[in-house]
Length: 191
Image (cartoon, rainbow, N blue to C red; front, side):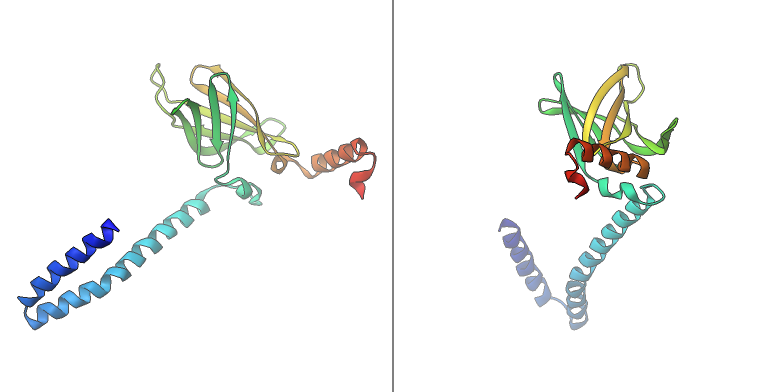
């Protein structure tokens, strides 16, 4: 409401100025007023285009399977910290009301025997006491649900997370999980 009142005051000031304007100046002022919503729409469309371009630049794997995880965040508490990863965005270490940036998604790495899109690298996080920036490796594991399995700090300011997701499953692994489920359910999963 305050913003609306401010805009109304601005309009009143403009009307006062218009009384002193020539007809050509009044016409120009009217054209500028008509252009305001168009300029606003243009900025909004440009912002949306930048966001689309940013998404298109992300490697969601050749078949685009990991797009389903885009902008989803997952967290797990470990000791006094909560570790959070927002897929294809950022990784954080939280303690109380503060958080430490562990990096932003930069690239994929290949885990030997697991394929070219098996480890997500988050780098360029907050500065560490030794001068380098924090980073996180997120190893994707095949499983029937999406959740953080574990987080470790094998060396100072370098974090390793294991993340379970069905998207990491090969067709063979998915079939094996389905058979295992079928056995556990006594044949009910096949129905």
